[in-house]
Structure formats: C-alpha cells, structure tokens
Image 1 (cartoon, rainbow, N blue to C red):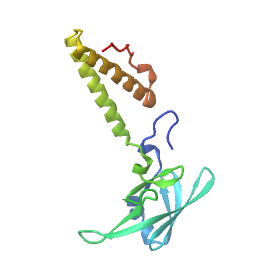
Image 2: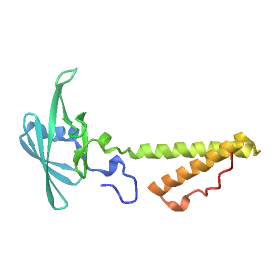
Image 3: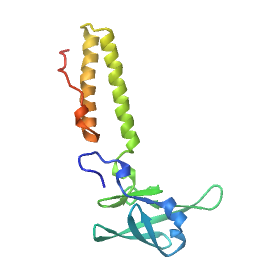
Image 4: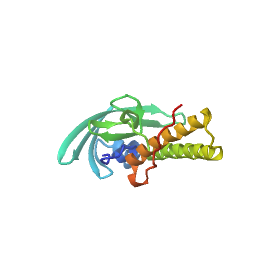
Length: 178
C-alpha cells in the first residue's frame, strides 16, 4: 500500500502477475497456492474464472477474475485476466483497497514517470533562468519568462514536498506585474 504523505506509484501496490502464475503452473491445476510479494493467495481455476482467496492484515478476502484464453499468432494459447473495473485483458493486476485492479484504473504512474516529470520541470526552470540571467532587462518578454520561473518553482516545490525532502525547496520570489 502507498506510503503516507507521498503520492502513490504503481510499485507501492502488491502485484498479481499472470506470467509468474503461468510459470508456477497455477492455470494447469485446479487448486494451488501462489505467493505474490509476501501475500499468499489460494487459487482455484474453473474453465473461465480464477477464484482468489487471500489473507490481508488478519482478514480473509475473496475475489473472482475472468480468464481469457486467446490463440497466439505463432501457436499456443495466451492467458490473460480481465480487470474487474475496466474489463480489459491484463497481465498484471494490483491490489487496491477495493480488490484487484489494473494500474490504469488505479490512476497511478510508475516511479520512473514521476522522476521524468520532475526532471523535465527542472530542465525548463534552468533554461528559463539562463535566459533571464543572459538578458536581465525589463520588458514584456522578460516579465513573462520571470513569471514562468516563479510558476515552475512553485510546481517543483510541490513535487519535492510530495516525493522527497522539503529542506531542498526553492525560494519563490514575487511575480512581476505584467
């Protein structure tokens, strides 16, 4: 589950990996136990349903996922499960507070995507600072770029406070009147 005070990312949620279950032979047996990141899941496979039973924080939970078996273009069968929320075939489902769902329904990004947003904002900030320091004159273009720096610093500070140490926040100057 996500850490308090931080925006959740996909890696914070427990994962039910269909690839791993295939390697363990869960779909070839009727009853089996699958271990996913410290969570023990009892699986029962019907023709089209995967019945899950798992214990989380001392409470028993039950779930049912639809199995899709499709022919592959090179032969054999591909096995997916349907996300209960969006009903798209998925290889991995994440355990949310309401049950298993895909990362798209959770609406959370991967950790690397979050780092990418921060890096892009930081690059934009550095480019604008270089332009401002290169030509420190007071005109409309300067005022616009200066105000963009102020806005980006605010966004960077909110990202830093959300994901990291707030002691490294940028000082935010006042906006210039346009």
